[in-house]
Image (tube, rainbow over all chains, first blue to last red; front, side, top):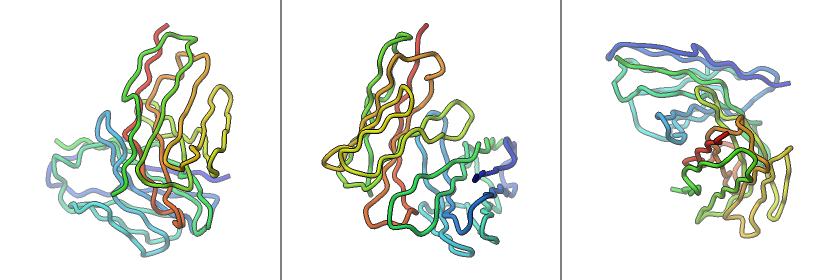
Length: 115
Length: 113
């Protein structure tokens, strides 16, 4: 069966520091991968998605970036964090190319607090 | 861009009561999904719907894919305390290969003992 891992679970960083959040998926090949951000008590905001190695689509302009160095690895990064980057970051995956709908499955999230 | 509306935004119910919530959009979707999120955790898939008119159950949960493809509803029967959480609907757009899901803002459910 497929599993998704996100780490770290929580992170406290000072303003202006760099960021690297990692997500890996096991048990499937060529998944679609996604990064979302969720503000406290709010819905999910799609940040990036990827349909293959090195292929990244950005949904929202920001100081964050994403990379997919391997088929089942998705990394969210920043060179200099802002206070507004605080939130709950979720990684998700879905089955790759398919003509029918397939649901997304989420990791347990990373709670990022910027001081 | 496409948006989903969920109602109600929040609800307080007594344990044992039935719950009904819905999700609407001005756009057509070919897949509807319902997720539940517990505090501090990622959303967990409850039910996936792939055909207009489809009615699917998962234990005490029942969801339906609206005939117009622009709405979906979720019912919970005989609510229990562990039903507390945020329920999100999500739609996947037509002619899409899985990379574009639209999420609603969520319905926050509280169950009173």
